Image (cartoon, rainbow, N blue to C red; front, side, top):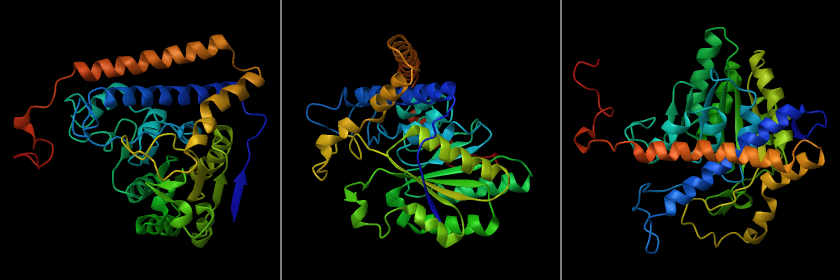
Length: 339
């Protein structure tokens, strides 16, 4: 049975401020990457030019999902994210400097500059992501299986978008997780668009949380891109998994403020003019201010701290060396004597 969650009123003020800090840090990072990505793409727009060549998928607007879910996790838990991964990486504690260096293709990056922004791997906090749609679900099962076999209370969180819910890997993973009673929370970010295809044209059910019933597991949907409600729903599902009660599915209605990728003109979005007014961060600031938890000085302090961390990470990346072209295949193929 699908449950729709509304935010509780008694959430700890310190927790709410931490959620706010995480969202501001993510947004500050995304806007800085946006700036650096476009800084040298002209004249016009050449996706192959610049310090960050190639595609770029930013998660501005989807911060409540990552902040609300990852608030309940530790670095011992595993997170597998999507091709739009920065918000979950930051919220789960991925090293900001090494992540930024990877995005800039530098030798000091998480993958020594070989992977780029869609392939971030940080074993220190058990984080990974991939450009393959729904690819993170099967690896999360393996991690959850290992956690269970070892008798720990560690869990895996597998994230995908609503468009990926029609992939075979999505359904196969839910089935196997339910069959083996694995400690995994499946998260679907419903930003309403699978690239340029609206969910109404691709998905036969109004909520992917409804699909959980087919596998005998709980399904929960959070409306309104509400970080307090995400935090409440995720807390219950994470605790359930830690108790050994098996998998669950959490779908969150969220918002993509920017294009599917940078350079996407978004001519397919009729609601685009209204998107800015749905920005979750100003809305949460207003709610915290009304509750007496946030004032101008605190808001400025949070912004300044986020900016300092982000700009330091970008400076680290820019100051780091590019990989040696002669070493292009290193770390890709097994080296002699490494087996």
